[in-house]
Length: 202
Image 1 (cartoon, one colour):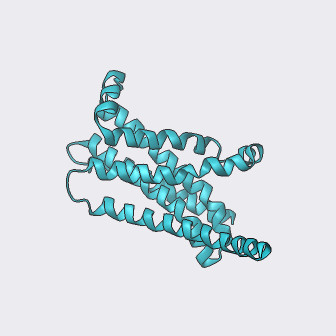
Image 2 (image 1 turned 90 degrees about the vertical axis):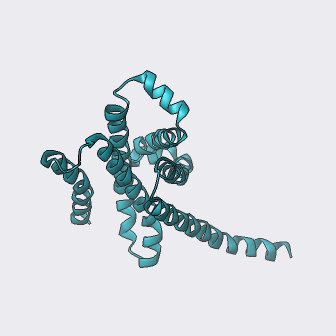
């Protein structure tokens, strides 16, 4: 399992290494900032969806070790989302908090994106065994926010683009399927309890 974790860790760094290479080779076009904003945002969304897909994949494949990779993938989603935020601050806002406040209030898609990132912060900071033990049941309740984050991230992506919605809608469809699978699994677990309750009351 250690080798598998190391391999996944390295693979998760590939997008960052590719972006660094593209910057050095001048392959991001005339507007480097815009290209970086788009690339980091898309990779953040991809890793977020991948983290959400781990549990369904584990249930289908019965490879329970996949659960141990979910935390790492989720942290990489936060890492790329944070990188995306830093790129936006650097290239689009010039670290001007006046412009930041104006954009936040005037552009709804930016509000959605920043809200998603803010919600990711406590999830990232508590993605460790110590926090899980200390928080108990509250830890699970907190980390359910990842589904809202997914919705906000997809809405952010759809709202900011001007044309060619295919990729954004594809990610939204994947998220919808993952949410439906989650709801279906929860309903399936609840059925035996409902059945027992009906039997007891009868």
